[in-house]
Image (cartoon, rainbow, N blue to C red; front, top):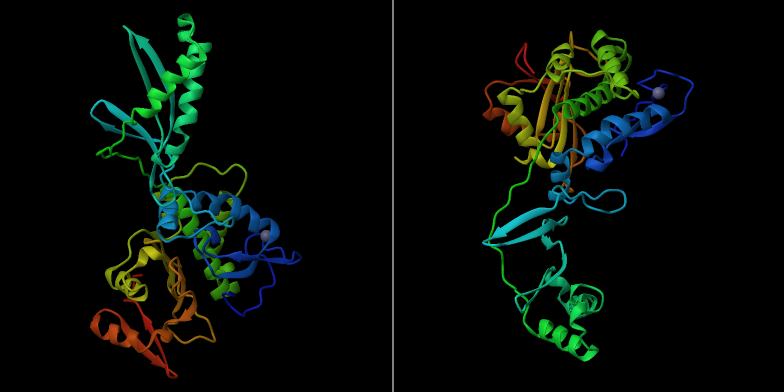
Length: 361
Ligand SMILES: [Zn+2]
């Protein structure tokens, strides 16, 4: 889907007007993004993809969202948000297991352990229930190895005796019951990585919507320099809260705008990437993690009415995706607005636009 019909004539990152432009997914494709535009040269496109986008997509919180909303990667695989090996204990027994992409546990098999102590022969192994049919052959192999080459060699068993032991092990029903246990898994979020992606999305949207006015502005060039630094081979260390302050960004969205995002996503903002574009800045929420970005001064676009508002919305659940004028959400939006005291409605030329309270995003 093209984000805009505007023609771009140069790469918005390196600003080189001679390079052909390539299709860039504004919200990363691997994170369910479905809005793209020809705004970056090939080299800048892949640089941002391999650094900022890749780091974002590999975040545990993004993998969890993709697994939850079934957003498969290019090869059709769903990510496994919990891909460690976990341990469940039940009394003396502990079982190692993995969770698949549906979070279904699968026992990680443990090789057979055979011991012969004080006349007592013990055979121990663990296997997922789905592999039950493999038990006879695994047991036979392990028992034979034990008596022919292992500690059992000293008994000089005949093949028939070995077979008798193996059959007895196979016939003795495997220890089989549900393990009633809970487990804990570490789960973290790297805010530097999340913000770098948010900055990339905001910068691209602002370039598309406001063109040169934004690209040449102080705020635009600050954002661009940050992204060039972050996508370089050796990014300098940085501190997310300092950078956010320098780039006029805060992780807090005022309640009326937060409610507007709730309205536009039917209360399911975790299932969407959504950006509200205004003359004063952009509020972005990616899988429910939001940031508000303010321009130094409002950017007025000549052919757009005052209070111009655009919505970039990309759903992870197959619902509404695209770039819309806020007025396209009329009349549901009007009805919703009438319930909100703090947003001002400005009707211009039969179009309904809106502005946030002054001084806020
Ligand atoms: Zn470029």
